[in-house]
Length: 123
Length: 443
Image: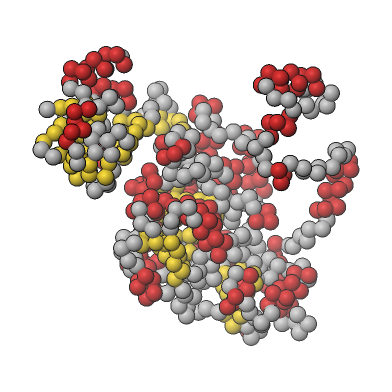
């Protein structure tokens, strides 16, 4: 089950663990990703606040935590292959895994259909 | 109407009215009252101004380069005429930041060459396109080390330039960093045993100067072996690097220094330029401007400012540093000087400096003065005089000689000592005369 934040992050939930990445729409808007500034494992993150950033040839963009919790794993592949975020944003280009502290936060996120609508509005 | 200010009183009134204020002074409401009344006298004609400035300049005591025996961060070197001739070209002198690469290729390429030469000199992988001076470069390196590992304890050798230490403390004061000074051993090197014992899991960085403030060449290899994974910051003097093994060989993470010896006049201590070089893996933690070489769509080589996301004009609150400003003109001067001298020229100057300094030391020892430390040195060494060396230094100065730096200015325990220096500009004659002067009873 995938859920989406209005700030264009996706979340895939497996028990307490939420895998987080950015959507295809977001990577397309960013342009070629040249660097992913991953957080430290163990970092506490709070829903809705910036916890890492992605640099593209155009700009540096903050990534907002879609859920609160602790970073338990980061995608170290991105250190050498940041372009995975462009190539496969919702698969191999995942960013972090967060151990959630409040599952109820997932209810605030959009489902696939609602997110699609949001992208159409934003163009 | 004043010739240089094209606004009439009427126009000024209109402009003020448009933005909704009454008086020009209203625009300076935020300026602290202390500096409101500048008490600037009435303007003078050019002829009078020139005379006035000349009379002020006449108060300066100009010392011949060959009679300068003081270094301590600012060094007397010969600067080939071509350096000033090229560095003062209007294209370089412009203060404009090369944001628009398409109209700044010359400046960008000159800075790129500067970075390349700094890398060659230090043995490091990447250098930024300059900082204010050596002291600010060190302070920034310390903040950078904190960004690298997030730790808080800085171990600073006692033999790091005291003013660099002060500047570092100022920069770090808002960052909750703590400093511990590591004392010296009998050779004038950083005490390895105490350094080793001071390393713990909170150690962020170790700062060593090479050659150190007292002129002694530190054993970087032994230091590196004892500091675990702390960030290793080395403060260097550029000429020494052309004859000493580079800090990169010993595993330095960040190398900083002042570029003044490389073609910049002593200028009463400034402006100079700071260099900062590091390893590729730390590049995103690096402060300051970075110039890169790339290709345009037609395959032509072009130069641009790169990795600007680290800089404050892109993301102010997340910038690695607020030192966006570099000393571009001074960095270009360094580049012109280095390319004029070439590696062999730099080495030649370094060797002559070494020979002159060692000749000076030998002559002083013959006169009965003892060196403070026994460690090997490059172009500077600490020497013991008498209890009131400061007054002796002043008397020497009155004779038109800039004597060794009175170490009492910085270290109470070394009040009887001076830090002597010689470079390629000192001659055998000037050294001999100076040593005779030191032996004078009336000094």
